[in-house]
Image (cartoon, rainbow, N blue to C red; front, top):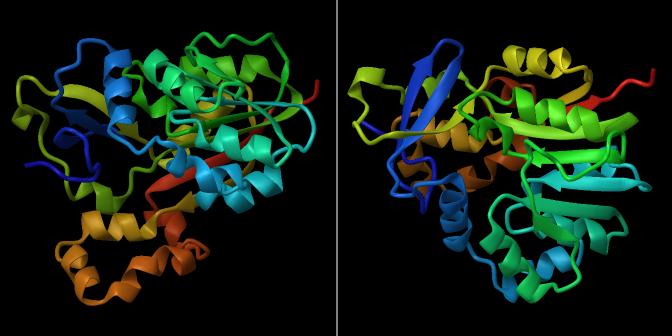
Length: 272
């Protein structure tokens, strides 16, 4: 048994382990850099892909970035992938740099945007001085460390200056997602760890333990959770296309905080 949450990726299996939903996958890559390079290579990354981001398009993060990012000071997107938000934020006047673990992905970005401030780097060992950033962005990154997100979160805390903010997202473990879980004994022998989905309470505690103060929480992706967690919902959306835009309405309601796909934490490093 598996679920198909991630298009264009190997087969995914989910196992409930304690309070976390743990995702495993079958892949043929020996090191993480190969995995992520292959992942981003499978996604659109030509000049046409970037055109709307060059005009400042921020996708589902538009209101969050505009409401919470400081207009002055250095911003880092740690784990920037294809770098589209680095492109967009700089086009809007922010001072944003991106790092990504996959060197080949960074090379692809540089082949299109020679002067874009992106570089190869490790979010567990950030190439930044202590207390040097006004803001830190991490969109779906820290959940991918099998040892847990603590080291990445501690690094984020180190480099953010007092009073600076973090915008950090991870998958949420909710009741709908748990419907696809199997017993660990059912995993194929060659299944490898892929990511965690966290309960809100646990991830909030992890952020607090490294020193962050909580500012605000958002959730997104109710439609996704319904589609993957309720049998027949995906086929229903084919018959009723209007359901495909349900996120535009329901992501603004309290229901999404309980059944959304992604949790977004806005945290702050306290001023001592």
